[in-house]
Length: 300
Image 1: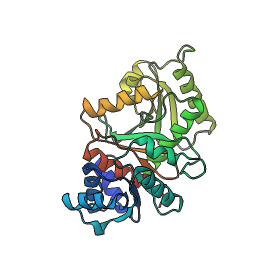
Image 2: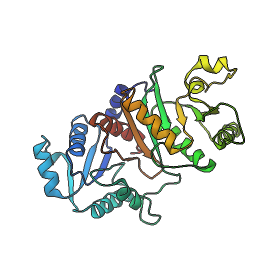
Image 3: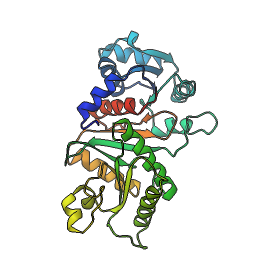
Image 4: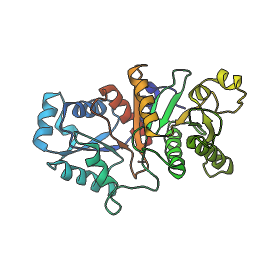
């Protein structure tokens, strides 16, 4: 079981043969990320975009073009189409967004006929070192799904559990988050939490332990949970937190970064391949660890 980000990177380095496709790697941040990842042996890279710009950036930033497979596909639409095509042909195991809007990448990926849609809803899983104990903590979905319904939350749980299985957590503890730990008809998030807990009990959500609703203190503090009379393996020991909506996930994720100053990694699951969609404000360190997480989530 991987307990920290250092171990995550070490485990990713041991995986061989992972190839990441990068559309429009035409900015310094993306090029620096792939140069570092290549040097560290995380993956091999297929760079799709304007070859002249890519070559110039590689030279300027200390990279060697011979270390990469470069496809001359100028323009975001052409570059993304090439990456999606390679993904459908099984020549890629991972997609990393370069210098282009997220929508320009995701729309072709979600195309029902020519894209990379999988069986599940696409959702973003954030992973960081748990400040309270020696293990990783996951949170989903603070990046893609605005107000998921019960069926979508089930798929969000499944995607997050798949990531944690790749990290060595055989039966991750999943807390379904809400503002309170009681079920109230006036608070739909608590109703969904109860339903997801019941699904897990019936085996409809497998290979994990699911419990909710849980307020944040009850999810992370065993003492707080016991003080309120909640005795459950997940309460106080959640390894994955499933938030009720994108606002809650976005705020919690940015609190990790900007208040706690924690390094985070995140990956989008549910498509045929893991997808990395780093924001322009994301640090090179976070991007590097996201690549490592993507490598461990990929299927060679």
